[in-house]
Image (cartoon, rainbow, N blue to C red; front, side):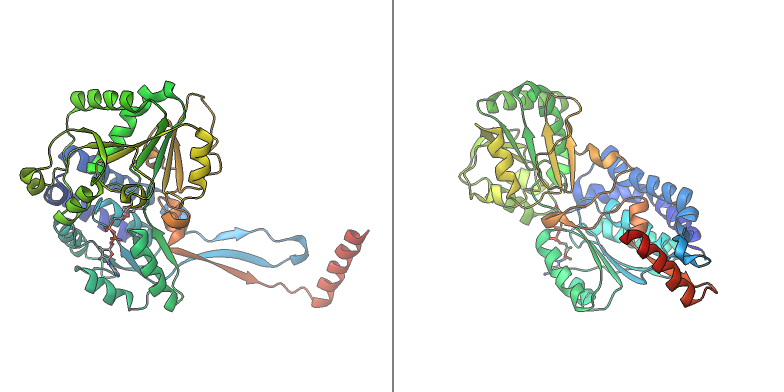
Length: 423
Ligand code: NAD
């Protein structure tokens, strides 16, 4: 079976289970039908199509044009699979974040073991069903929790692709190092928003609330907190209130009780200036954590230290924009940086290192299929999507063939070149 056949079989099985995918996402995360189709089904189908269209070309060996002194020699770069790959995916976009790397790994010819999250168990079972029904013998799904993950990490793989938190990412990296296994670490962290100018407040608020509300804030590139000019927080809240009144609650639930409690704890001793609902036993039972805005948390508060990963938005008013950038430069590099400014075409990011940047928008960078996705520093190692995923799971092996040319002739040519350079 060719790699293309495998991709087509996977696609068929994925399509066949279309309605089970939306059902599972509703059970695990309360995702609406539209949100599931928009963020988990179509992006995967579109990636299948992208690979089906380009795989033959990407798989061709690349001929390299030699330097003149290697006259008659031949060089090429042969794409070859790493071998056995482990893909560990998280619970927040379980299908998207399993299949996007998987398509590339299979297309490049690897054997794959998938470890989906134990927290989104309905989705993980459907992922297993899709793989089993595809009939691909060299793709396996291992279900289970921390214990099973640790067991897997004790085995030798030729490549590990991990999506999750920086904390567990470090553990994965340590285990991979024991076998010198290369890794991609797609991690998270705090993605800041900077509103540079009060004149873009109106435009920015709906984009920020939209990005933060998606999947009830459980998105790795969700805006984590907002820095905005002094004296504009109350205007921000009024605009947010009006946006939420018009658009309603987006639905979706917090993945489990532990995460709900974690979010509640983040609100301790905070100045809550807006909340679109109550945190009571019904909310806890249904996982409906209300959208909450807090004003000016103090430095060192957990809400400013750990990734929020929920619908809480801290607003931090600033006196000096320069100081905001100065402070951010010394913080861990985020997966996404969001800037709102009035000047069109100004793409400067003031020296902030980030996995990706979106100016005058939130989360839209993910829609541009020509650019890669990935973090830097604390937000990860490596990148993927489309051809970048194929490259991630491929070792480009240079193969060189010598010509009949004599070593003495090569000496003569190199001496000629050296003499020319010396002159
Ligand atoms: P996590 O890192 O807490 O857990 C990931 C998996 O690691 C778990 O499913 C578990 O099986 C395993 N695990 C837990 N403890 C372990 C241990 N001690 N040793 C080995 N394995 C262990 O992440 P999560 O809760 O699944 O996802 C949330 C995080 O993922 C957030 O930080 C978020 O930003 C990040 N994320 C990143 C991206 C991205 O594309 N960069 C996408 C989604 C989520």
